[in-house]
Amino acid sequence: MKILLVEDEEKIARYIAKALTAEGHTVETIHKGDEGLKAATTRPFDIILLDLALPGCDGIEILRAIRNRSVATPVLIITARGELPDRISGLDLGADDYLPKPFAMEELIARVNALTRRKGTDSSPLLRVGDLVLNETTRDVIRGTTKLYLSLREFGLLNFLMRHMGRAFTRTELCEHVWKSALDDETNAVDVYIQRVRRKVDEDFPVKLIQTVRNVGYKIEAPAA
Ligand code: CA
Image 1 (cartoon, rainbow, N blue to C red):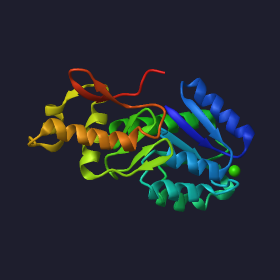
Image 2: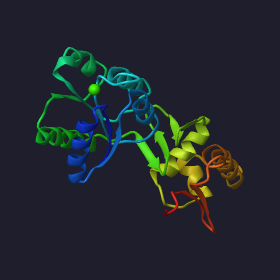
Image 3: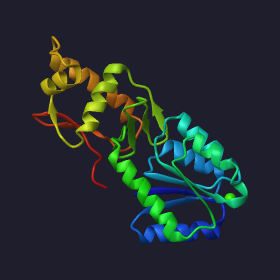
């Protein structure tokens, strides 16, 4: 699991990161609220651990911002007992769990694992290929930190390719699956839409995700690093 930890107390942050890393998770620690907000809203994480009192922008603001942008990542609030009145507003705003400081590390790990299991049973609306993230519920498409604006047909095509990442489809298959119909000049139509999607998804980025497969058609895949 890729975990974002937003916690300004460096000693506590190090302690948490070390314990979760030992559990096999990847932890990215951010000490400032505004930077945490940016990371949480622009990059994919499996779980976000959020302190409330933070410099720059507090945890409640971060939580509000990520839920407003329909980021569905589970959020576990970890905060001092003095900040307990915030508990209600935190859960109201869409936090998934709450852990008051100080806490035993076993307790934190148990909560993280519980959120992981809960996430696993939902069908996540997020599809990811490299740094490209598509939200099937909100229809947001983000590459790195850039929001992309796709037409309905472009979105349908990209959504289908991302759902079947790594698999190549012929133009005819794409027509049938994406648009549920045979278009008059389907070869040309698919090429036109692929070209449009490429312009938005790949043109301004060094790593190209949409790939032409010779004698077949197209697929989407992040090239091996
Ligand atoms: Ca704090």
